[in-house]
Length: 525
View 1 (tube, rainbow, N blue to C red):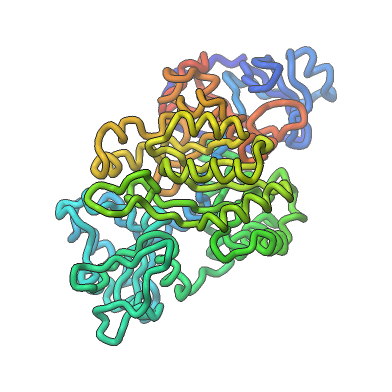
View 2: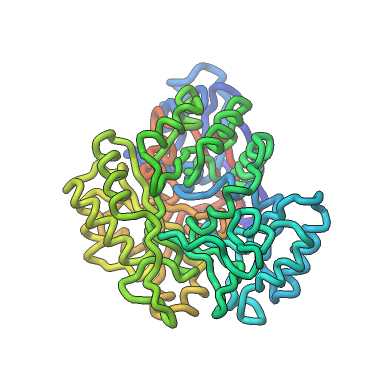
């Protein structure tokens, strides 16, 4: 066995499996019943044998090449990452890290100067007003000036957006004076207005953002495929070879299918996005019409249908039991209860999985109560909560676990929003944000993820943070075996018949896991 390096420098080599048959030796943590073994045999990208080196060699053809490794684990699984958006973010303007409004506007102005006349200025805001020196977001007048006449739409954490007058006008949302809106607020969103009724440029929650999004020219298939490719390169660089990409349209799913024809470098489980006014049967049929069923399901397949039940904790739109401070709003319910019941009944009758974005305590309780109304038991993995990090109630968590409801948890998201939550509702709520131990102690199946872009897509720093809290193997399972089980993937364990997605960590013992640990992807898709 090759002795592990003590070098913590984060250099990685991405290596494809060198031959159809390979033996890997080392201290191999299978995360299956075999525990830690000395060797595994790989045949055609699948784990064929596990055990001692002597046994694996005896079961393999003579001359099978051997890779001598150190400490080996399954490659990482991200149960909730907007991979398509991760790739998209690499080619769009972002305001993240701007210290003040002039800096943010300068970024927008520079991006606008490169656009053709009439072209949309699209990007990611990824800022909170309190983070800027002025303590506020840019005004619509400032956005108009920076956009240089272009319609502008900036995404804010996939919930809210900033839009200028040209964008609102293109959507028919401004009256002739351009100082008042020509449309009312949707029931599950809001166009923010100042005290005089003028729009501020902030669109709150997805239903309001959709008013403008529907007139934005859609990206072409070539762009979508490029975003997928770039996202997968980023994921492989941090040891992730399986990812669930939620909130996708049939067009985006079709782009994945087209990309799969050339080969995907990350195994992808796709979540179609449902919601009010969208029939779940039609949604699923539209997703299947992309031809995804003809793809190798170990590489690309449909997963759960996703619903947004509420907003975000950092944005003050997650559903709470009491109003957010300095407001009369206790959050926004994005999916009507009747729609939620319809999707739950569809899931129960068809066996198709359902994943529900629920951040606030009232949203989580609503999902649990409604799921119990539809059925008193759910097969493990068929229904899971997404996020569920704000002011959670232990009794509700235990009831969820008892019903068979799982939870997709993202420690990277908790870190990303903690400051904004603290500013909104105080230190106590922020310090207790997303304590993974509480969900684990409830008995629920918990799968780890990132919710990137925005939060960091690298799982290793968060696994390392959890090691002293829940132990090394349990922390590792959160981002391998349990994440895979949550999304219905056969990956995450090195057991016979599973995909051979194999990661070497340059450690002597798994308990030494730390941010910056060097790694090498030995085999994967």
